[in-house]
Length: 160
Image (cartoon, rainbow, N blue to C red; front, side):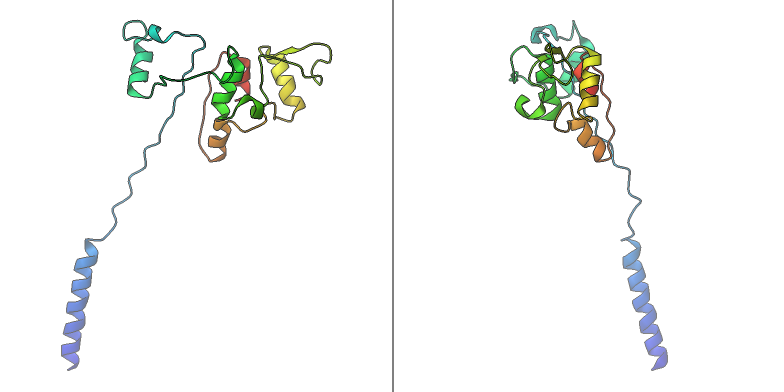
């Protein structure tokens, strides 16, 4: 009887081993990181982007996404619209409501021009880093452990 039980246990163990050998998890392949590139040109006519005129930009657009029905949140105000794009909120919530602004803590006698780097840096310093009053998408990505890079020709881009 003892011998019969040993044989049954061994057969059972062999069957378990055979089934479990196929269920070993393969090493997990590293997940591909997704990269998002947002390209914004101020005042560029859409018909200027072509395979002939701008081949790299044309290729980037055609391998990605093109916004064909986009609208400014505030007409002809680059920094306002750029901030709306970078934060996802309207100007009334971001704190950037025009390209020229009255901020008495920066200049009591004149409106300030947000195109001047020293003005933007001073505003950010006086507001403890909250010149833009809501987090940008880049900040949210960074807070979640992601990496971001920003290349800009506008001073408000220094804050994004």
